[in-house]
Every structure is written in structure tokens, then in C-alpha cells.
Length: 510
Image 1 (cartoon, rainbow, N blue to C red):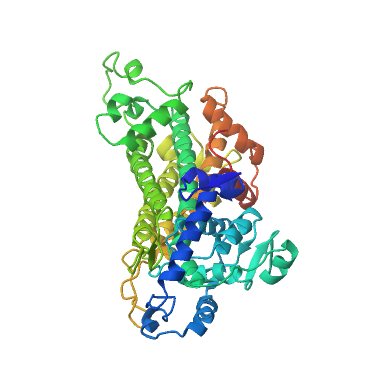
Image 2 (image 1 turned 90 degrees about the vertical axis):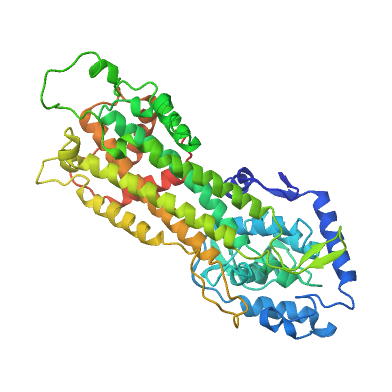
């Protein structure tokens, strides 16, 4: 049982979302929420408080009668539950729920305690609201997507329950759950915020870190396959530049290759004597996709670390409007729900993930082209050249998927279409940015899966299973369990999907 106190880490998200650790709110959280609720209830008497006794957005100029306050919240939720397109994967919705639960736990929203009680139960029981991809502009937060969450909390809408989409009312009856108590501003408090884009974003960072580790492992293995000189991975060379990410990637590759019998020392071959030749038969330096991996993946790691920090700051922040401050005995109106921080970070993340797919595609091409590697048959074809095709067909998939990533990497951060009667005149498009980044990450897993199968075939052809590093050997054995060595042509898509599923669901600790 993971006790929540209003401060979450990426590791907490991993435990709750990926391992299904149950959660429990600390007693202090309930006290904070009760204090906030009681203060707002008293403070809002005889005052004009946005979303308590006013309309919303450009309709805030209209005062709402006390007798209509509760209906106002229900009207807001129902009218804005207007998402379309594909359902967001339940794993990402669960992360959004956790993010929203955490920000409400800070006591800056004035919600009734039933909100966090029910949200905790839904998370623990894996009852996941149906939320659609389309609808959020990320200005007053994820209004449309969070309205679908709020809809479930008032006992309406639909949920994913035991892998089925079912009416919320039906599932609540089965699980003996009651809808939330709407008293003051439970509707707007649930909907005003960046929790969907942030929840998706944090899952994106977790998946990216795992993907990066696999990409480093593949890059290490290719250096073995071609018996590359290892000085481009040396601490001396890489520490001549001051970037931490570059240092860490080079160090990780050195660790991966520490017991390899294939990588070579330049001093043993080129520094020990001057060779009396006009043209060297072997390359003096490798192609950039092999030699510059620390310089290419270092910025990926540095960016990923930075993105994680910003997203965790966001998830542990109050991103509601207005902000209830019990200590100052005041309510402050502003724009903490604006999603520009998340939108920008998602654009940064998808850029560097796209670069990872480009690196994997170029490394793949290097293995498939005998004019480049000079040691492998065309398309790493273990069968009969001309009659069989090896990895030729699946390269098209890697190339087209990488090209899609390059197009998807155009930024959302600088896309803003005014809406809401121009009340929301500058918007973040943060949820779109997070969802597109999710797609780019999933695409890159496909490209890396194809590269990985090719690496295994190359090791098979060269018969170097006992010479590669122990780390590469473990990867070889894990993938070989999924994809048998093939000389005759086989239908490739089931194998690509198997490997993609494996590397998405297994940390690089094989």
C-alpha cells in the first residue's frame, strides 16, 4: 500500500500505473481537504467566487442563484463531456486520475472529501473512465477530457471494468460505490487543470527511459558486430565535452561492452606501427550512427531528465482556478490551469524520441546494406540471395514509421487557435502534444524492434554468439525465444509485434 501525502515521484507513478500498487491517502491529506472545503464554504457566502456562484468562461458575467449552484456543476460536467475520436488507453487515463487526485490533495481546490475518496477507490479497483483523445485545447486545462472523468464520479458515463466498457451506474452497483457529493465547486475543480496531459506525459517519460536503454543496448551490439574500435566510447574522449547525458550514455555503453571479445583497441591495430599502404582496407573510423551514439543519445537523456523534472513539478502543483488559500484566508483567481509547461516539454520529448527512431533506422540500414558493413549479406538474408528476402520487407516498415515520426514532431506548443468566444485566446494544446508524443514513442518501439531482430539475425550469420558481451548475449537469447532464426521467408508482422510488446513491457534488465 503506497501512502499518498500530496507529493508524487515518477517512481510512484511507475509503481501505481505499471505494477498496480494500491494507494491510501494519508490522514493529513483528508484534514487538508476538509480545511479547504470548510473555509471555501464559509468564505464564499456573500462574495462573488468564480465557478461557485458565477457562470464559466465568458459566461462568468452571469450570477448564479444559490438555488442553482449545485445544478451549475452538473450542467458543466455534462455539457463538456464532449470528447470524440479514439478512447485514451486506460493505463494513461489511470495516470491522469492519479495526477488529478494528487493536485486535489493539496487543499487548493475546496472540494468535498468524497471526491478524493471515490477517486482512490477507482484507482485501486482499476475502474477507469472512458476518456477520448479529441477535445482538449489545454488552456483551462483539460476541460473536455477531465469532464469525462467528472462524469464518472457523478455516476454517469462509461468505464473500462475488467477489460470491458460498461455503464458507470452498472459498475458502481456491482462494486457498491456511491457517486461524489456535489456541494460547492466539485465540477469545475475536477475539470480545471492539466492532469490529463501531465498523466500521459509522465507515462511517456517512463516509456521513453525504457526505450532509451534498449536503444543504447542495440547501439552497443552493433559496435560489437562490426568489431569497432572502442575509443569513441572512452571516458577521456567523452569527458572532453561537458554534457552529463553524453558522459552517462558512453559509460552505459562501456558497461554493456565490458566483457565483449569483439570490440578492438585502436592502439593494438593502428598505433603500434605505421602501415605501409596507400589505401586502408578497413575503416579508420566508423559511420556516425555507430561512432557518435553518446553525442546523439546524450541530448536525449538530458532532455528526458529535464522533462521529468518539469512534469513532476506540475503534478505536485495546484493547477486549478481559482486557488483556495486557507493560510491567507483568501481565494485567488488566475490561470494555473494553463498547460504551456507540459505542452513545451512534450514537444521537446517527441523531438528527441524521433531522433532515436532516426538513429535506429540508420543503424538498421547499415546492417542491411553490404556496401556499408562489408561483412553481412544483403538484408541480413540467411537464405538464398535472390530467392529469399531476409529483412528486406520489414525495412520498409521501419523507414515509413520513422518518416511519420518526423512529421509528427512538428511542435504543438506554437499552435494556438482562440476559442470560447475568445476568452481562451492563447491556448497550449498540451493534451494534443502529449498524445502525439505517445504515438511517436510507440512508433519508435516498432523501429527498435525491427532493428533488434536484425541484430539477432546478424549475430546468427556471423556465429559470434560466444564472443558478444554478456549483455548482448542476454538480449540475443531473449529475442531468439520470440523470433527463431530463419532462412526461409516468414510472415514478419507477428514477430515485430511480439518483440515490440516484449521491449515495451520489460525493463532493460535481461
